[in-house]
Length: 233
Image (cartoon, rainbow, N blue to C red; front, side, top):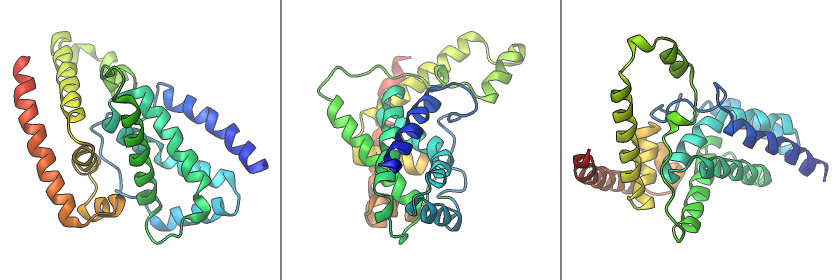
């Protein structure tokens, strides 16, 4: 009971943190995963502590991976609010099942799989509803780079160029949303997050050959969709 209460007290500010603008939220969505799946030894120490009931250890894992999970969730779903809620669900699920994590794979591999599952489940729930308008992350996240850009506006792109760039970003996300889930997820993991084929294979629990085949089809589908869509600009 005490552990559950501590978790609730922690997870409420987590969602607030994810929604807050500033340097505590993910940088641009094009950012690749730093260090790929992280240092396994460091993660295992924190996982062991979390399995022993130390909420502070799990909090460190959350802070370490929340940006990456939000990037993945947003690219899968295309809606920032839904992505935030998906990340919250991801860490809640991870916390509740942390004692069943056997350390046979990297913690981040396990966490990415949970995040993707929650993202796909949320997509299934929303597909029968009105399609959300894709929100450009630049409108929601304020990074150090964007703050610097505003301060040096004279050296930046013109307003028209910035508007055109945002429109292209929205079109790209719309095209990604049109891909099947199994194709979009490999595209997100490989081309946006920069994971290796081996890492993606572990996350999705499929052979390397399947990953490569899906990625080829995903890239081909996205390319064809972009040719049609960007021609409208």
